[in-house]
Image 1 (spheres, rainbow, N blue to C red):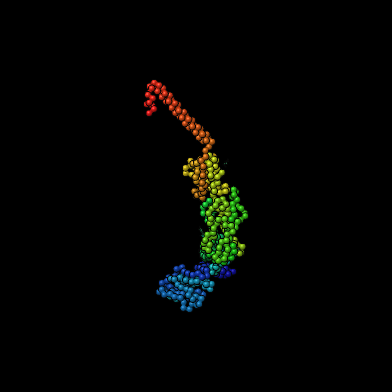
Image 2: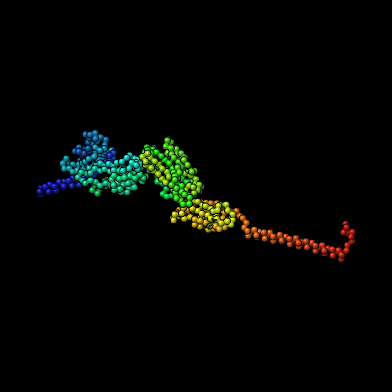
Amino acid sequence: MKTFFQSAFILITVLLTATGADQVVYAQVGETVTLKPSGKHKANKHYLSWMNQDRELAWRNPLGGSGLSKDLNENWKDMLSLSGDSLIIKNIQLQHFGSFVFRWTENHARFDKEVFQLLLLQLTASAPSPLLSEDSPSLTCTADSPQNHIRPRIHWLNPQGEKMQTNPVRVKAAGQHTGQWTCVVTVKQEEHKGKISVTVVDLSPGPPGPLYTSKNLHLSIPCSIPSYISWEQIKAKGLQEVHWDFFQAKPGTGLISDDPQRLYSLSLEDPPTWKADRSRGLTPVADLKKGNLSLTKRVTGEVDRGDYVCTLKFNNSVTLSRTVHINVLQIISFPGTDLISGQPVNLTCSLGHPLPSDMQLKWIPPEQSTRMSLTSDRLIIPEVGTGDAGRWKCELWQGTTLLTSTVTLLKIEFKLSMWMLVIICSATVIVLLLVLVVILCRRRQQRMRHLRHRLCRCKNPKPKGFYRT
Ligand SMILES: *[C@@H]1O[C@H](CO)[C@@H](O)[C@H](O)[C@H]1NC(C)=O
Ligand SMILES: *[C@@H]1O[C@H](CO)[C@@H](O)[C@H](O)[C@H]1NC(C)=O
């Protein structure tokens, strides 16, 4: 019994010393591997050999001479080189994995060695890139176990460097899963890494929130294929349909209709072309082959409010889509924009639905108007004056960001009021009376002069003949 324990103990010690010194190196097929000694040998004193399955692969003598073995078999042809004391294996293939021994001898006698375990790391995707969500894409990492060690621990890092504990790991059909995935293999607290590139077919991310616009502005409703995926790759994935739909917002409520209007469909021949179903003034952009599926238009008004949905359908029932919510800021003037002075006017600035609590409206009256800037959505003017004519601007703010603004033009005609009429009539009457008084006075004066004249003639009579000539 005692001897059993003794021998078991010895065996364990041997394993520990043998494996304790082993260096574990992981590599993927096709990689270039560098086996680098830890530096316990003395290059100017020792004869160095790199061995694989008891065959010397490369050597270096204390004088600095070095070379590859002459009898390397086909397996190793053109694959090896030395860089200092390190062995470099180029484009490694399955048959090259295994143990490598770095050995040094002094005077053909005492020798020591370091063992390298070159182990296979395999990173595989369930389908070739680009992936579609329907491929239920997953990545698997397989790492060979080092001799005499428990199985290595494995986790993944996604392209953003976030740790994913599962293996295989599910790849989501979202753009952010495109990029380099890293498999991390942990053996005895030491990490070994392998990388695999993944492309997931997806549309570029849409705008982070709704878009705000107003009448007469140019609007671009974005939808595009990211530049790292070509149109050919998309087609090769079985693209069947591309279309744009519009879900109009119901006036007054802001609720989105659930009855879509087909705006455009793409006919997929080469080159692909858009066919308008009901364009509503929208125009597709020209560089379609570059993956830009955006629509543009000049905003008409509240009829443009709603959700615009860009959809790509693949023949395995995978659907990719992006929704862009368009808000149109609009001023409504009641009873209209052609007004008569003295009329009451209500100006309402709105998106067609109650404003989110973090947004404010700001009114900017025409320059010559004496009215103050206001921040309510409704402006009530009990009696407009000619000073209120001009451009009324309404701005939509979110914190310190101006989202959009819109303008309405008020035309105001001057009209006489009752009182003005009374005053004007009275003034006219007064003027007429004055004129009358003046005329009467003149008449009276003339008559007086005439009378005086006659009296004079009586007092100082002049010869008749004098008057006659
Ligand atoms: C697509 O075209 C629109 C309009 O020309 C442009 O504003 C937008 O930047 C383009 N998008 C991409 C991703 O090229
Ligand atoms: C303007 O709004 C006020 C308050 O809602 C209302 O009492 C008034 O009748 C409105 N005037 C017009 C001309 O619409």
